[in-house]
Image (tube, rainbow, N blue to C red; front, side):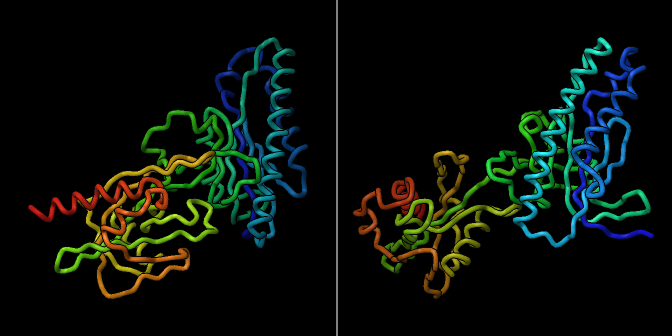
Length: 342
């Protein structure tokens, strides 16, 4: 009878096996090599906590879960799995070296791994389901060798583990957010199969203008407990969402953070970059915006919200602003004035 099971599924495959096994010295000794490899897997993924299904030059490994693991337990599970995989690879390298010496033919082989977590269907002694299909496809993506993990199944990396976040397009499955090892990340992958996910920021500075052409600028002082730029003045903004246009992101941030509606002046923008030690570079684009409606600005993430005149703004020190905001805003205001005069 078929049953749903919560599992960690691992596909492992020997890279370079097919061509290597065609050599005569290898072919007549393949049983010993495959038996040795399966012995390593059985040792490191012991029953009854795991079930191993041999698949030629690879295997499917199913680890049994309760299905109610907490996020912290899931991260701890991944940490333990990574240690086990590292031990398998060390012993596999030793197996290859010993086999090469024994048969007189080098065994320069590596392993590719795919890892997912979720529901599968147990049918007798076999397994089926979408997650196994995805796991197999991820293992196929792990080239020339290395490890690829479903990032939605394992959202947090264990401490001191460094993997590269990517989005892979898998045939018949679609886009999958993954963690990959450097060997995989450094390989050329056709655009059709890979979508990079850099962090991109958008920001806006809100202004109002009275009938006499007098401009006021909304400034928000970051709370002192903020990790980046505590106590400095900024406009409003943050990370751009997937499939979101620049102006949509700016309007969303103003509504969520300051409870304001704004008109984004898309023709008036400038670029900026956030650079922090030991952090990836974050590119951004800043827009000039005009307040819409009668709502008053409010924010729990800022210690001060204030409207200043253009003269007051120009008299403020550039050091009290995030990054190069003062000079960027002066440039945008000059362009705004110039556009209004034509």
